[in-house]
Length: 82
Image (cartoon, rainbow, N blue to C red; front, top):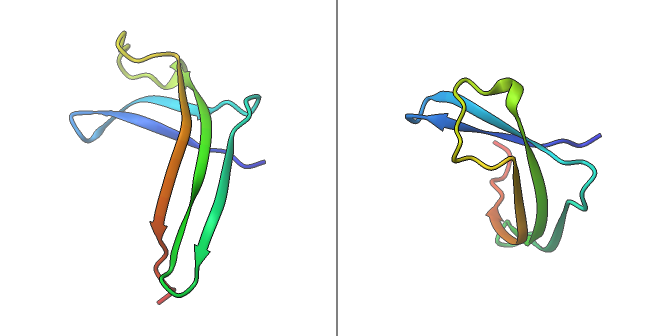
């Protein structure tokens, strides 16, 4: 099963809070353009992340329990293998 997560940092180097992908939500990534000449791909995404308090090193009251990314857009240059 695909998964995704991210962590917040304290002072740029101390892991703090972890957010895990809410697999019960309608998350998606849709590649709309894959240009093999310029090596760019682009598309849209939506994702919902839930905070995992078990990994908190310090409780941060300013962080929400749920993060929702809606109407997201990405454009990425894909580097050819070396």
